[in-house]
Length: 69
Image 1 (cartoon, rainbow, N blue to C red):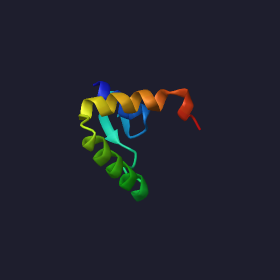
Image 2 (cartoon, rainbow, N blue to C red; image 1 turned 30 degrees about the horizontal axis):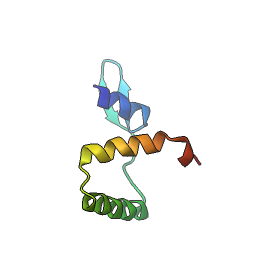
Image 3 (cartoon, rainbow, N blue to C red; image 1 turned 90 degrees about the horizontal axis):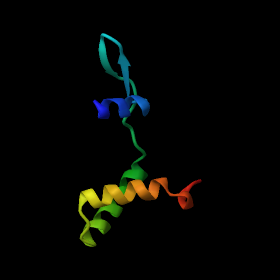
Image 4 (cartoon, one colour; image 1 turned 135 degrees about the vertical axis):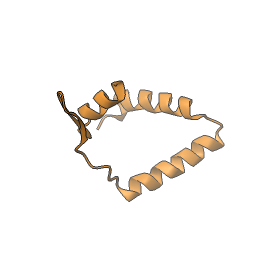
């Protein structure tokens, strides 16, 4: 249920009380972003990092003040 709530907050899913959940957003991602992510994942794998560690690090970096726009 937490995942569905998170998707609702992100605007991907809409919850209708008593009816269910409906996909409302788009999953389209810029192809350049996908290329950058693939390269980054390859580099992180070469460093020996596992998925759990990368997700943890990504969340911490994402929240850090020194990467704000």
